[in-house]
Each structure stands twice: as structure tokens, then as C-alpha cells.
Image (cartoon, rainbow, N blue to C red; front, side, top):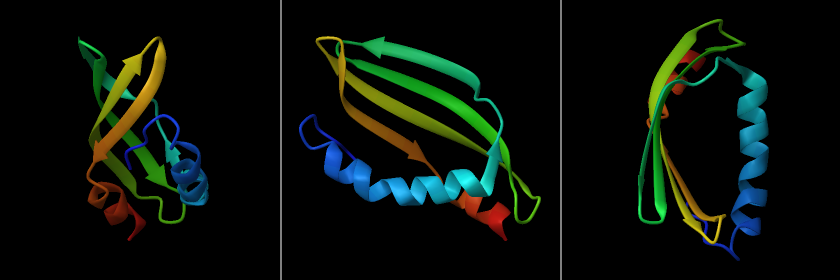
Length: 92
């Protein structure tokens, strides 16, 4: 999902139930190995996340990348990249 400022409300509202369902089904651990890279109006954050799926007790681990575009001190674009197969496998 890519949200441009002014178009944020609709995608966020549509995605919220799925995120609530996911966050109630897993027990994440704190992010690890965060690396920040900044250039021009962008900040790229690379990290790793671990957790446990509550229903199965299975652990998951995955790497992710977040890209923020910042203008006048405001986040105007956010992108999040990861492979959902890592978590899906833990769901069984």
C-alpha cells in the first residue's frame, strides 16, 4: 500500500481491520538489527522481527524494509516491504 498525503485516510481505514486481526493473533518481540539510511527526502529502515503465532505456538522471523518520504517535517509517503510467507508458515 502506498499512501500519498491527502489520500491516507481511505487505505488506512480499509486496512485497519486486517492489522487488528493480525496483531491479536501474534505476540511480536521488539525489532532487531535496525539500520537507518537517509538521503534527500527519504529514510530507509531495515530490520528484523521475531514473534510467536498464539494459536499454533509457532515462532516466526522475518526481515523487512520501511521507506519514509518526509517533507517539511511530515511523513508524506510510507512503504513497507516484507515476505508474508514467513508469518503465514507459522500460522500452519
